[in-house]
Length: 395
Image (tube, one colour):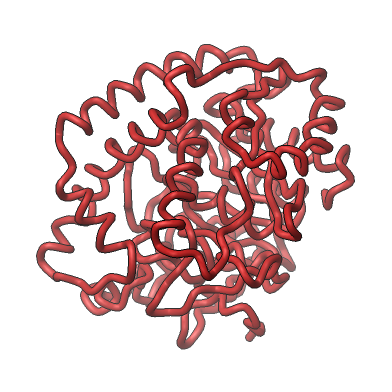
């Protein structure tokens, strides 16, 4: 059994499974977020009451099967924020994983354990999930590579839902080449291009702390060496706050539709922040949710038209490094809102987004995101590898 110095794995006996003797990922190890089923195990979804009220899975999740068949060896299930509804990575029941890159800061959630496991070098590959930023943000916070694929590009069969119209199956690695290799296993072979031009989204750069923008400048220059000089454009004239609000409202009704019946029947005990988010989801005004869906259709048309010829968006993955562990709940919520205004760009439109560990602020990592058209996942992974090489990062 592999050691776990950062508390990345779910407490208790660890699920382990040998992969195929041959395959593109043979000899590598992987872990999966504890919302993916593994046959014979209860999927805990980060909450003891969920685990108590659910039977063991009878079959593996589709991504688990695919990685095993590609030769990778499963070494355990990783911690998640309760019911995947949070961005800091805190879990009062299982313990919050240590951020290996910045131990005094949160690891990011909800795929906190998977990000920590890769950042600590415990596993080669870790599966997470991303609805509102839960792969992209922990990747940025922990200084590793991560991808939120195009919506629907990777099967979520055998995974617990949060917001089905936004949920995606993403993954983490410590180098860009392996991130691409996993994509060659999980993604369909055909896809859209990501050949440029490179579009620098003004609102997202302005939203970032000045120190973050400065730290990411060399990586942006590297991306320009690969794709040509970036064009600076305004994508969100309504403001990123409008993106956050639309996503929050539209996704909340899905979260309650997916998980509300269980919450009502079970009356589970939640940790700080999670209870409040589900209470807000239950109380969401249907008119606000409808307005969020209408806004989504508008930006869908705007952004997909912009990206149709192979253009690639570039901006800071997170506006700042991870919050300090000492941050108050109010401070965490403020970071969440500011961050999700940016993550909602890809989230609302079902776009693939790869984050590159491109800079540090006060010693803590920050990531640079490349975002392409729906279905450009494979091309975007290749581009990320080229940008990483141009930046001098692990590739």
